[in-house]
Image (tube, rainbow, N blue to C red; front, side, top):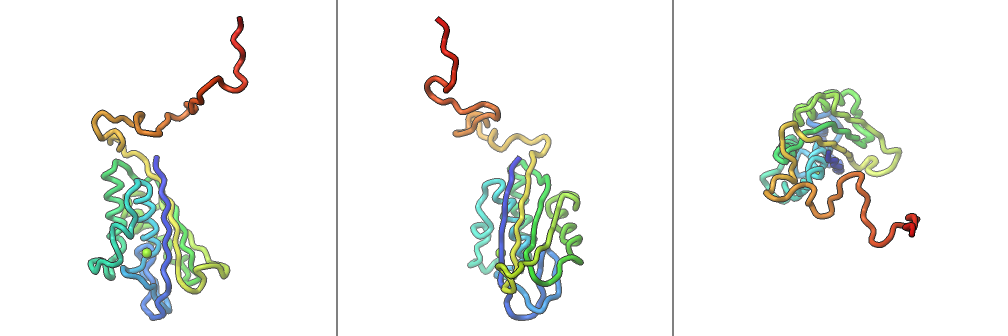
Length: 198
Ligand code: MG
């Protein structure tokens, strides 16, 4: 199993246009500022996927300075992150996300978001949770929208463990790896060890 955490936030841009969250465009009095479509939820999800496999983060893979991603549909970022997850031999067990927004109201759109995210990650919508929170005056407050996502990955059946892929190097030989249940060996006699009888 692997776990990944993602976070993102974007400021409102002060002009009309609606916000895109989880691939759903929602009418709103102002849009979100961003190089891509500013979908904070999908950005958090992409980073959670990338983090779970120890890959470079979203900003490294898709630099905001690159004009190729101007106005990009953020589903593209999730697809690429998920492609890397699959390539590493993992699949998504479940995903849980929270969108922090005072407005717009997300309740009417959460089911659609779950469907879109589930399709991107090849899981059932019941494996995807999208929750909505207001800020109670805390950041980002009226300034924008933030999102957090946590994802759990499980080995796909029939795939080799990622760390077994290089010849002559098993998971057990990874530096620092200790099989579960085997305590760290401390040099010298263990504290409280019974004295050897004479
Ligand atoms: Mg972002």
